[in-house]
Length: 131
Image 1 (cartoon, rainbow, N blue to C red):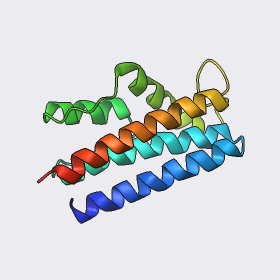
Image 2: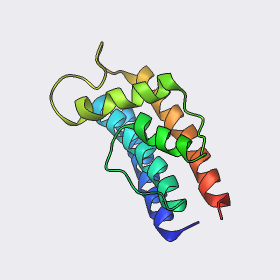
Image 3: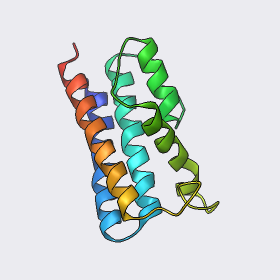
C-alpha cells in the first residue's frame, strides 16, 4: 500500500471513530458529516493507490463513477451513494438537517455508520492487495 493511501485511510478511520462518538452523544448531524467524510476519504485512498488524478469533489457518486470508469468496482449501490451525497452540505452548514425530508436520528446514524464501516473495510482490502 502506498504511504499516501495509508494516510487517507488513517483519516477515514478517525472520521469513522468520531461518527461513533458523536452518535453516542446524540450529535446526529456531525455524526453523519463524519460518516460522509470517512467514505469520501476512503474512496480518495483508492485514487491515490492507483495513481488516479485526485478530484476536488465531495460527491460519492462522482468519485465512485470515476473509479468504475477505471475498472475499480466498489460495492456501493445507487441509493447508498445518493444518501451519502445528501449528507455533505446540510451537515456542515445551518441550512437544515443533514437529510432533506427529516432530521437525522440514531437509527439513520447507525445505518450510515454500518455502511461506512463496510465501505472502509472494502477499500482497505482493495488498497492493501493492490500492486
